[in-house]
Image (cartoon, rainbow, N blue to C red; front, side):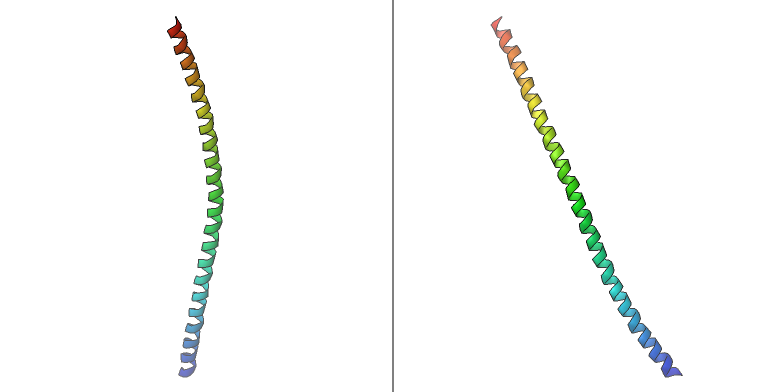
Length: 81
């Protein structure tokens, strides 16, 4: 009866170890896939944010140029008087 228990314990240990290894590998694969999916989604969001910032900076540059023109026109008019 004892040899049966020994074989069961050894076989059970081997099966458990194999299951743990396979489970660990599957968890690692799923984590990598989910993190790469989030990275792609995050990079799209970042790209959109950069585009919005760029557009905003272009508008700001146009406004500054308009203000400079207004100031220079006012300064020129002040010198002529």
